[in-house]
Image (tube, rainbow, N blue to C red; front, top):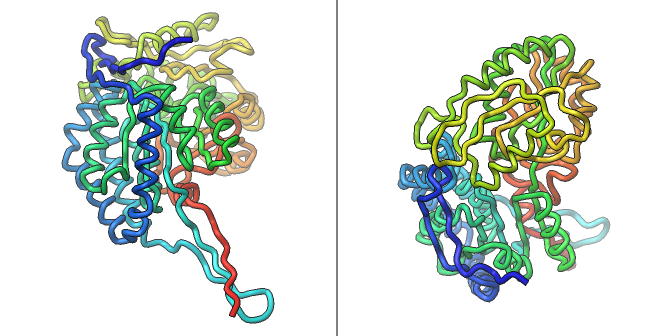
Length: 456
């Protein structure tokens, strides 16, 4: 049996010799202790009332805004996120906390008449207790925030186990959050699988974002314990382009969705489906758009595609191109970072990993379709169902076929990437399990419904 690591180091993906942080692992006992401390703090946090919780979340939003420049620079350094995207993520993080700061004032239930006779029936939603959050590295501030903020607003306490690659970001976010909250209401436990398993074994509800394989383990373990579980586990997203689309605009959107942040988003475009006569002009426009995207140092404000997160991720990208015909590729910079050239492949054989696996890199397959119905069948043919983008000049044809798309989100004339945090986020099939994240749907996940009968 391999011993659990005693410490976790994160490295700058653009310069792997730069160690961003190296912290001791919490260990299973440390993670479990954090959950118990959070459980002891939870009743007081709930009883503090709506005004206290709202004020605290508003204070977090203000603190994130005040530290925006520092946080963006940290996301660039630790997660390799291009500066423009890092700044946007930090702004969204502040907006998420501010959005959920209003949630404590929302109704927590309803009053109903009885079926017959005097009395009242009440429904009321109550927090679970301790929310265990297991988060990835690619949105090191936004994902922990869109899980933690609704959990806290509803009266839960939070224990966050971040991905090791984003440890410094999580710890800095925790410092800002903890300044506004009572002790033990929000805790970070650095570590890996050992710590994640301990949180999973002790928390009262679990929200996970990460790989499909680990998400399955999390879901089964939480289900066996009988606790609420939410798992967002990736996608193999398609962009469908109809012949009447603005091809240049569609190509620009798709290229950005393939290569933005080196394709390291669960909403990135992995398959491009050209319908009928759209194939040839899209083929040329997409190749041109992809080659024109700035690839390089994530600290450069002009960069769109920075490095991959690790050497392992770079190896996975190289393996994914085996057996595929490259239509177009950008230029990966020379240097020490884990860079990959944004790539579109064509004539990809059935069963190829580009058509069956989420590579999580700046690569996509170009596929032809006879008509919209055929394109929908191709889009639905994979195990995932997170998001589909549809590009068209007239909504009639698109709307006619959109209901047959088996994805949780559909974006028309927009990139597949992009999240509206005030609306439900999630997918079908292997892309997710449990209730949706974000918006009011998140408040439903972090609470349970109770029905009260009041007889005279």
